[in-house]
Length: 279
Ligand code: A2P
Image (tube, rainbow, N blue to C red):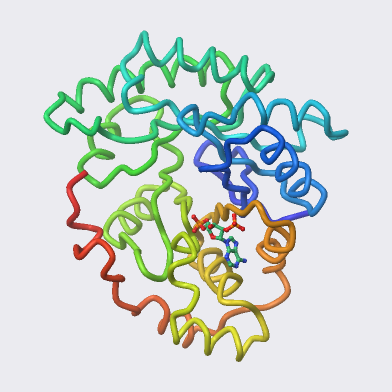
């Protein structure tokens, strides 16, 4: 079984998870989840916004495995934030997944696309709902996603502090300021788009490392996440890639090569330093 990280409350989380963003077709979802479980993934990452929770629930129900062996994450969408709405959204998620608890529940974004909303109050209300769900045992751990330091700080004074922050993290987009803050505050970081949605896989540095270690650029990205103590959540609907992305436990990137990848500049697709982007 795969290595696990420990959250601040002692709950264990598998260090690689299966990402499901943008897989919506029911048969495709069911097939991909079952393939991932066959290969050994035990951690599945979804969100109400992904519109695939019912299909994931079906795949899990149909798969012969004990619930305790699985680690299931979901997220409350930006426009569903606030105490009351969050509780309602959670009940729908639980019902769609056909589960009686989920392992990790996250606030998906710190603010609505309308960034003039009163995000601090809304997030505190949302967090109160997550704290209640945590205390009731319906979720085993709680956290956030896409939060920068200022968003996190607003929650660090609460009784139960965020255990996880899920952000974009890949060799072309690193959010180092946010990552450092999380590490210093015992918040486990998870990487969405650890492959940069595949746009970084033809980068020359990654290609030469892939050659050196006899691995693919995707496997270099994922191993690099792990060695940075970041949980990787690669997404694929392609069986051979689902397998490839899990074969990252039989090699180690040298400290020198880690430093080289850590030093790669942010890619220019946003034109902005990720730590400075205001979302
Ligand atoms: P597909 O799902 O068609 O297999 P990310 O997780 O960074 O968002 O990247 C997801 C994208 O990367 C998807 O388009 C996925 O394609 C592709 N992908 C996933 N794994 C690999 C891999 N091992 N090699 C190349 N592309 C991959």
